Length: 114
Length: 115
Image 1: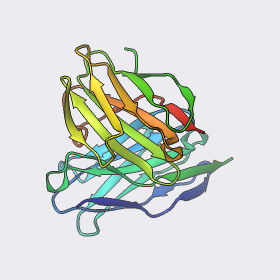
Image 2 (image 1 turned 180 degrees about the horizontal axis):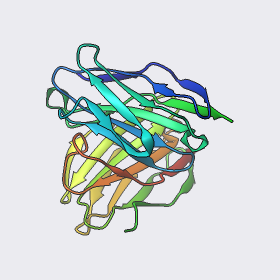
Image 3 (image 1 turned 90 degrees about the vertical axis):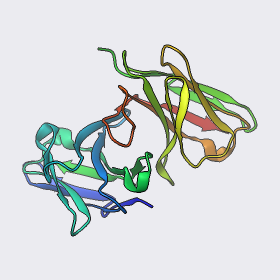
Image 4 (image 1 turned 60 degrees about the vertical axis):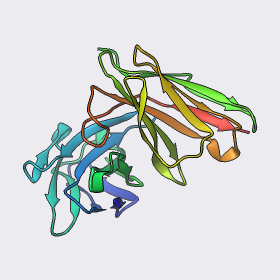
């Protein structure tokens, strides 16, 4: 069975400071991992995905994530937060044990202070 | 290219009624998935349709059903509505790949309130 845990329900940063959103997963096989962002009243948008290529994945809007198999983590980072980054972020795992159903984390709300 | 559209955007229904939600995928996309988003359970996969056939199904009761038409548009139906069905229902489309493997493009959702 696969599962995903987003370790923080809320993360608060100041504009211009680094962002770290943490995600741990549980998977029997090499999973596919995604980060999506959801702005208020909008659908989800893909930030980046890992599918067993490079362990450091670069996404849109300056975000990147590193796949660490030994730690079963896929944390999302950005060097400098912008006010427009304030949104809900979801870590997603899929493809484990033959499952084609994506499992979403509970989400992390990123708050950016001016 | 137009994005995924969902209609209606907001809906209020009474317990026991049924409801049909509609989703038009991005042109050329053949896979359509449906999700339920609630504060208590988060985002949960309902089902996925590809070429008019249900390809994957989540763990929801039979009151939740869907279908896909030849133009890839999809509908989901919930019968005998319960208060717990109040949620944001999201539709997502992708070209051909499984939702577990490829980027999905999400619509803005239909907010269903059951009273």
